[in-house]
Image 1 (cartoon, rainbow, N blue to C red):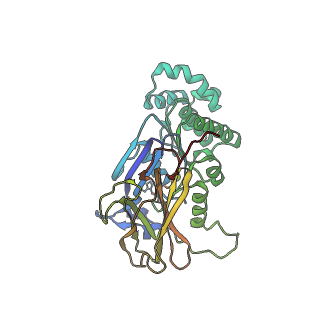
Image 2: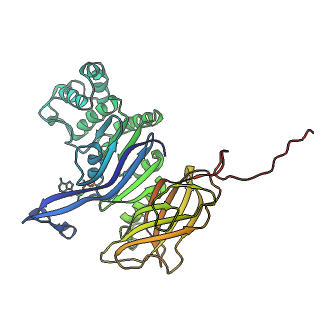
Length: 396
Ligand SMILES: Nc1ncnc2c1ncn2[C@@H]1O[C@H](COP(=O)(O)OP(=O)(O)O)[C@@H](O)[C@H]1O
Ligand SMILES: [Mg+2]
């Protein structure tokens, strides 16, 4: 992966709510400590790394934790545990209401927002006309933003975000709020940002946009990353969760996502040894995958597969637990260790794609990728594989 620009490690976010507000979601709440207070984990142990120049679509059902994750990355919410690091200037377009002061005019909010993003006043003076023009607000720019419609509000917010020359753009599903013409304008702007090599993370319900625009898709459900990788696979995974992968009226397929999570994948040179990451051809490789089988109404037996992928996600080889010898349908923390006696003569950085499927039905339960998990150094020539060859030069 390119230089990581956004990195979240083991991020969890707990909200404390008053029990009177916990209505039909009550079963999802765990009793908190204080009387009348319950705790709710909106994010649990989230690891996300985004490299420079990537465009990542963050998708998931309502209430999955997408907005919370963006706010944590934007530094607006502090995670309950875990670490977040973002390099460069971040411009964020979060949920309506975040970032603007309703009493101030549009113009005043432009200055306020730009200042928060670290732009000096004279720079904002220079950009103001262009910001107002892009936002299509005209003279309304001098009205308090509390009089703006949600669409007008988003137009101004988007216009500011794209004018401050950010390195990282975080966008919540606000684009759906504006009219279609504006949405098209925003997309053109996002594509311009992509070409300029900026890093973009956006939440959307428009799944086509994810396959068209994104280099990666991340599926979040119940506060956990359920899939991270290929955009088309991410969209397929979400459709399975939502049950929209079947024709209308078809019986609901069981949604298996969420019963098992992959916590880690570690490459070591010895059994149970520390993560090494670096190998030479012929070295032993102990690949350890740590999974949690979560307690719940239904607990599934899981088959664990690992695909070792090269650049461009090209599968190089795969490993899999044999039938009947995978994760048992018993909640707990498990460690699956694959032993490769000798690393093949590969070259470069390799990705580990871990997928857990239902041992009997084969339906996917969860998947997760670990970029740059293994480095193999064999030869000095380019190519995934180091192939020995005899060379002769003769005069013809
Ligand atoms: N400030 C808050 N206090 C309590 N619960 C919250 C708060 N913000 C979000 N939540 C809860 O956290 C969960 C995730 O919310 P959110 O991140 O907004 O989901 P999404 O954007 O994926 O729809 C939801 O169940 C939501 O009700
Ligand atoms: Mg949201």
